Amino acid sequence: MLIDENKPFYSVVQVAELLGISADRLRTYDEEYLVAPSREKNNKRLYSQLDIEWLQNLRKLISKNKMNIFAFKIVLTMLYNMSDNEFDKILRSEKDEVWSVLNEMKQNPNYEKLKNYYHPVTY
Image 1 (cartoon, rainbow, N blue to C red):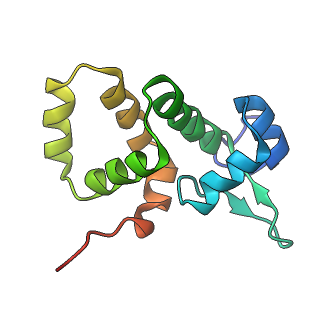
Image 2 (cartoon, rainbow, N blue to C red; image 1 turned 90 degrees about the vertical axis):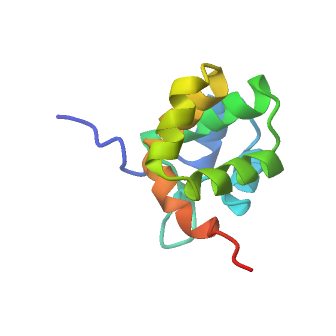
């Protein structure tokens, strides 16, 4: 039997332990709209394997590339306002790890789930 990577299964404590962060930090990521876990009837957060992969990439950007939460939100806003052609052009020209990680994140369902929180600002 194949495991559905998008099926919410893991608790906050399990995911925090797997990522080597505190459960509070993981909850902060949710409250800051950096991940979109599923919710049970009692409002308990549940994470899928794809959520965990998203968070692993987020952690790479934060710990390895020194990107803070505010900067990541700016990057997400920029990505949501960029066409696929523009993104592909940058991806081809920039060979650093940040763009490669962002490309992985863009393929993850969390990218679409979070889109509503990063609407372009209109003046």
